[in-house]
Structures are given as C-alpha cells and as structure tokens.
Length: 110
Image 1 (cartoon, one colour):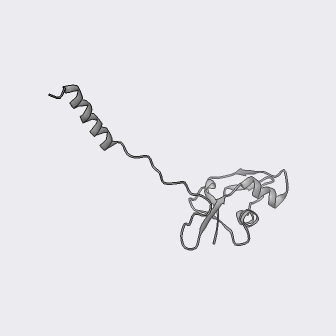
Image 2 (tube, rainbow, N blue to C red):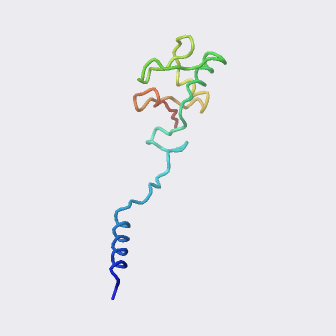
Image 3 (cartoon, one colour):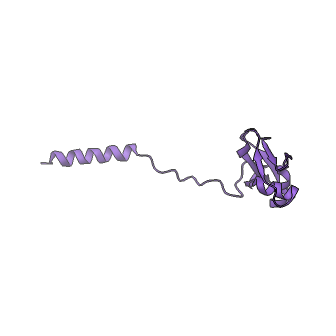
C-alpha cells in the first residue's frame, strides 16, 4: 500500500512541474542582431559622447522633455544623433528613436 504522504508528494510534484514555466532563454539583443532586411542594430547612443564629439570635451547632455527630441547639450545646443552613429560605427550608420522617448535612441546600419 502507498502511504498518503507519498501520494500527496507525488501529486504536488506533478502539479509543480506542470505549472512552473521554464526560464526565458531568449538571448538579449546583441550588436549585429538583425531587426529586418534593412536595419541591423549596432548599439545604443551615448548622448554625452555625442555632445562631446559635436561641441568638444567637457560638454554634457541633459533632457528638456521625454520625447525623442528631448536631448540638449551644454549651452542649450541640439544634439545630432546621426553624428554619434557615424563616428562610432561608420559612415553607413544612422540613428533611430524607435520607442518615442529620450531613452530609445539607437544606431543601426546595413
């Protein structure tokens, strides 16, 4: 005869294995990940570096809003994200702001 505790333990084990999801093993996006036939993600934009490349060392960035155009460089100057992508990843790179917030700027290329 099977003990009641063994039966309960077995039942709980079957229940747990059926209800616990396996961990998500999908890797995070890496440089070179294909987004579509035209765009390949190359990296996120370091806005402080973009300001320094455009206006010189000691220049930093700050936000004036949450939209894609919410970044400014010291002295209330605009920042050209394409310049960062060009300098960081080459002349075939371009900037995109896919999510619509200041934190969504990325570089893409062929």
